[in-house]
Amino acid sequence: MLLNYSQPLELNKLTSRIDAALHAALPDYWAVTIELVLVGILIIATYALLAVVLIYVERKITAFFQARIGPNRVGKYGIFQTVADVTKILIKEIIHINRIDKFLFYTAPFFIIVASILTFGAIPFGQGLQAVDFNIGVLYVISVSSLGIIGVLLAGWSSNNKYSMIGAMRSGAQFVSYELSAGIALMTIVVLSGTMQLSTMVESQRYCWNIFNGHISALVAFVIYLISGHAETNRGPFDLPEAESELTAGYHTEYSGLQFGFFYLAEYLNMFIIASIGATVFLGGWMPLQIAGWESFNQLMWFIPSYLWFFGKVALLIFFSLWVRWSFPRLRIDQLLNLEWKYLLPINLVNLLVMVILVLTGLTLTDIFY
Amino acid sequence: MRSFSEYLNDLFSGIRSLLTGLSITWKELWTKKVTRQYPENRGTLVISERFRAELKMPHDENNEHACTACGICQMNCPNGTINVISRTTETADGKKKKELDRYVYNLGTCTFCNLCVITCPSDAIVFSNNFENATFTRDKLVKQLNMEGSKMREKKPIKKVENEAEKGIQTA
Image (cartoon, rainbow over all chains, first blue to last red; front, side, top):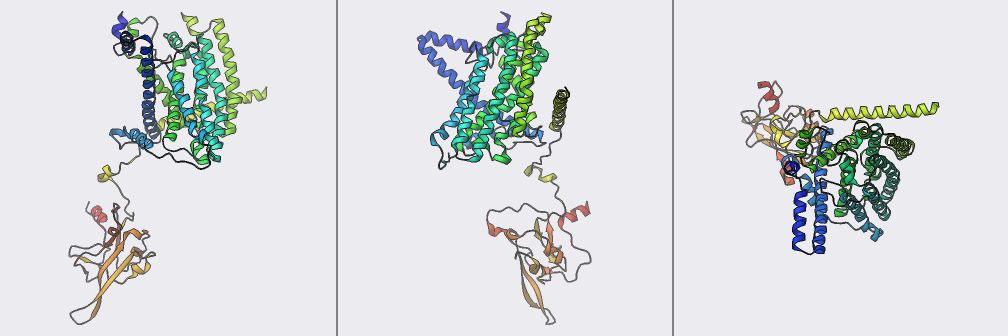
């Protein structure tokens, strides 16, 4: 009962009230249809809004790393810079290129953006703020996010441009390799928490985040997940598919206007998605900081709404991603594949085994202390 | 076994070097930002003394300059930026004398090579620090450097005529 008062800013009460009102006023199927449409609109709106915010944040932090100020002219501290950029990209002409594979060329951006949005829907943003909650959530996220590579390959193939093609092939090699690592790293945690459903996973991390619960093994898995996550988003030191000095812009060289905007949007949102899956699986998702036994402290922590906890943790990981991006030089393609197949994959497989042993012998933190 | 220890060594030295890189960028994140916000910092802007922004002909308080209209600057100019237009006048004792009528300088074609200033025998022209020369039309870039009704100074000054910035430093 106390929880009702201690969570004044939680959104799940609002959503359940809307749900109740709709069901009272309309027949069930209409209510469900309207809810589905509403959720869809909300997800797409959040998606676009987050992209605008992320681009601004990225530009600012990048500037700080390079001892610059960054955007500071449009609005106070340049906060409307990305709004202006988005407006520009929306009204730009889509340039038609000769001798391209028209159908594939125009569908490629949609593959990328749809894969990205599908993954986005499965993220638990807060208490009761999750659109898709399968019992195989982790598997769903991995499989759906890897659909994006089809878009990249199509874009490179259909552009009739050798730079696009090379960029897309590099991206394909990179994505297929690192998907493996990311998947196994997540599987390590699935072994630990015994569920693939993201909501139960968050719930199970109430008193002990997975990264602490599985100590050594979970930490290694977290690091590997971050590395392969950065590689999957084609960012950071792994941005060789769009290495500007070699390939102009990689697979989206020939795209312009809103089509380019789709690629750009998906790139930034993939960064967010990787960070939020990492936060959900390793860092306790939207769950506020809870310490077993400290009841009043726990109550206090609940005053900060769960979505703020979620975005805080994600922001931390995104900052880390930017930090890495501006620290390390770009890898060559052979170094990239070396890193994955000779280092990450063997370590990952051993790590998975270690985790299984930890869980079976009861050496996780929760087993030891509770 | 040796190769396995090498593998591990490789791995950990790699991780260590990555962490060193991260710590360096972390320090860099908190350094003072070097961006100068130009239109706002006009008051504190420091332009190097020898920066060549625009050709000027210094006039003293009697509206007199040092140009003898010899045309050496015009001859030395590699791209015809300077056009010295002279006129001949008669002095009181009936001598004919060449005098500067208009000193036309086209900022738009100037490459700021400084040859005119170097070769001027009477130090009549200098490069000033005024770099805000943007205009909306090209013909505004063509400027007349000698002021209206100015005359040539009778004697060659002993000291070199300074531009305004130098004067400011001397008084300060």
